Structures are given as C-alpha cells and as structure tokens.
Amino acid sequence: MSEGLGARRVCLCSRCGPGSPPLLSIQSHVVRGYVGNKSASFPLQVMGFEVDSINSVQFSNHTGYAHWKGQVLTADELHVLYEGIKLNNVNHYDYVLTGYTRDTSFLEMVVDIVQELKRANPNLVYVCDPVLGDHGSMYVPQNLYPVYKDKVVPVADIITPNQFEAELLTGKNISTEKDAVEVMDLLHNMGPDTVVITSSDLPPRLGDRFLVSLGSQRIVMPDGTSTTQRIRIEVPKVDAVFVGTGDLFAAMLLAWTHHYPTDLKTACEKTFSVMHHVIQRTISYAHEMAGPGRRPSPAQLELRMVQSKADIEDPAIVMEATVL
Image 1 (cartoon, rainbow, N blue to C red):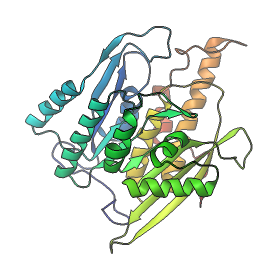
Image 2: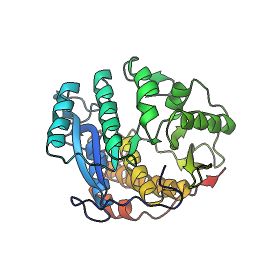
Image 3: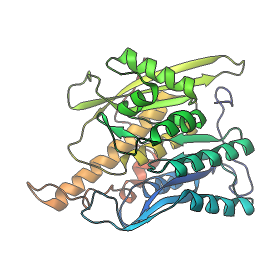
C-alpha cells in the first residue's frame, strides 16, 4: 500500500466528511437473508463506511433453499449503472469490494471499473474474494479462472482465497506452512499487498476441531523498501453449513485493515473474532428454533447480523494470531 508506514486512510471529500470512506460493493443481493451485499453492507455501514451497492443478482433468497427466484445483472447493465453514477460525478471511492460471480464478461467489466476508479484515486483499495471453488473442485465455470488469474488478481490489493483457490491461482500445492508462505509470496508478486488464506488443510496445533488460516501483508516503506508480516490463526470448526460468511469475512477484513493498515495481526484477530461471535449467535439461535435432535433449516441458519451489531463494532478478541 502506497501511503507509507502508519498512514490511515481517511476520506475528506464533501460527500462523506471526515472518517466515512466511500465504498463501492458489487455483489449479489437477496430479499430474504444474508449473502453478498446483504452480508457486507450493514456491517460496513456500522463500521462507518459510506456504502454504494450494485447488485450482481437479485434473488428471493440464496440458492441453498429448496426454491429461489430472481434476476441476474448482465455486464451491459452493470456498465449502464456505473455510467449513471459517473455522469453525476459521484463515482469517487476509496474502496471497491467484490465477491461471487459466474459470468466472465461481468467480471471483465468489474476490472474495467476498478481500473478507471484507480486512475481517479491511485490510493483506492480493491478487496476481492476470488470465488472459484473449494475442496478440490470448482463451482464456477472454468472460463472464470483465467480472468481471475490474469485480470482480477493483478488489480486487487487485498484477496481472501481459500486453500484451493490460492493453489489454483498460483499453480502450487500447499501441504506445509512453508508451502503456504511461498504461495502467499507468489500471490503478492501477482499484485495484492495483503493475502489471507481463509481456510486450509494444514494440521492445527490446537487439535482437529480447528482450521488453520494464514495471512501475509507486504508493506512498502517510505524509502521504497518493503517488509512482510505473516500470521497464522487457528479458528474453531462449526458443524453447520452457513451461507454469506465469506462475504462477511471480506467486508470485515476490509474494515479492520482500514483501521489497522500496517498491522495484519490485529486486523485478522478482529475479523476472525467478529466471525466467531456472529456464527456462535447464529448456531445457538438455529438449534433453538429447530428443536432437540433436529437439523436446522437454511432459513434458521441465516446469519444473525443485526443481533450482532455490537460484536461487529467492537468484538471481544477470542482468538490470537501467531506472527510467523
């Protein structure tokens, strides 16, 4: 990040006033529940960001339910919406956030928009969750992979891949912590200053009820030299399928790296602690609603976002990162 060590990004434009960074979030929208923009917007607003949302899809609910209906935004329609804000000269952002996409032309249009916004504001930070797949298989069309690798990741500043996505983007497998560090360095060399591998198959030191996550942040010093902070954090596993947690994670990492731009350890401890509190509140509610011995439904497992407002703003730190 080009501001130099210890700098903090604060927007002073007439639209936002001091301390309310303008942010463009291009993600999916659901009427009911929390995924995409619904997962990201409320927490970011609570954290003081001025959030503009473009909904890449508008669905009744997420696709984990038995039924869903809705519409998908095309690349041309995305362009029209962006042109509208541009014509009114309100396309001024400090951050861009993107998540799940299934269409290559849409993704390429996102890249065009990010590049234009970065020309206007070279300090703009683009946070990207490169959603490609998990556990060894892709769940987006194969033709998205080269777009992410060759076009999206090079313009991103912060990325949040899982292990499968990090391996896919770099062409290198992760079987040890050393491998993970090398993969994160390869990702740095592709563009992003900050890389967080959100989950991995590495053996946890705290036992098999935990998952290992790793992060790396390359900081450019005022004299042009760079230093890298790498961290490892072990996160408790939860026996349930949640939707929208990746979107919340990327939003919270954006928010906490804004407040701690050169302290990845603290930013990750805050981010993972928020996730822990939201998930614990959600699982408790879901089991209470489902009743003894019954598996909660997708509706009961919707994230308890509004109820977690205080934890989002000021999370009690419940897991500590280790500096590697």
